[in-house]
Length: 312
Ligand code: ACO
Image 1: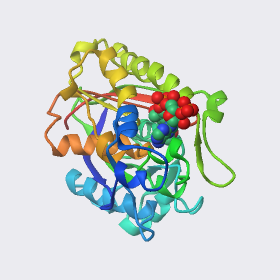
Image 2: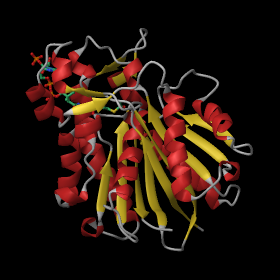
Image 3: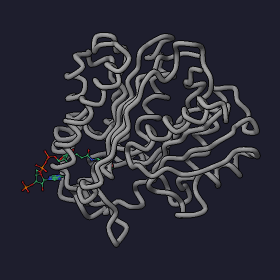
């Protein structure tokens, strides 16, 4: 049994907040943000649009592309650290709104690695033959846990949702290998504080990320007997262009073979990889039989990587 992606979708809110806009609210500059992070602008959801709403729009897009009906979904997995409420889960809200009557539903909390954890979990249920179609979402409304007076963090994040429908694909395609990891001793480097604000030790997270992303990317390729030169497209977690470049350079692939949406959306945590994947598909940057590496890292600390042969 080979498990792969039947369709992808994404949604980003229409409101654009530029670096210049942020210059008005904290002591920062467009030049500082661009040179340290690669971010030029980000999308921020309005008060009436919560995490479940963005999930719904992205899910509809992915189901359409996959040509799968809501009633044929067996399981909904929503990766998020910014749910509407701790419970009911976003996945249950989505199950109801989509009319996915037979689907089981649960949320996954693995911060920016959440979509990796979701895809790998989906694969297990499909591999065992228990479920046929699994809807995996990565979604965040980070603006609601952002401290808008803290220039160290508020310039980095944005809101959005990405989705994929996973199911059986042709032999040799789909998820070929994966790696998931966690190091809870690093939890203090990236967390939500008692005021519900995101706190981060940027330098420590940076060091962890530039080590982990290249290492995990190489691990998933070597597990299947391929090498770096075989990679057709790299989709790293869109946190910071300097971290992404470290992974790209380690793999020795050219700039045009790496997803780069961080400049338009900032860091969308668990939504960043599925948004970038969905855009790459829609923009024609991924072709049938391409070898794609998806790789993420985030709070927990957590990390995850997947080697995926594109196509059904
Ligand atoms: N504008 C202007 N100056 C700033 C800003 C800002 N927005 N933010 C920080 N500074 C200042 C700092 O105060 C510091 O000043 P000081 O030297 O007087 O103290 C100076 O800039 C340099 O700070 P550094 O921390 O050295 O900057 P660095 O080059 O490390 O970049 C950054 C900071 C962008 C946060 C970087 O460390 C980074 O990207 N870290 C990883 C972050 C990340 O990936 N987070 C996502 C994790 S995913 C998840 O789970 C949510």
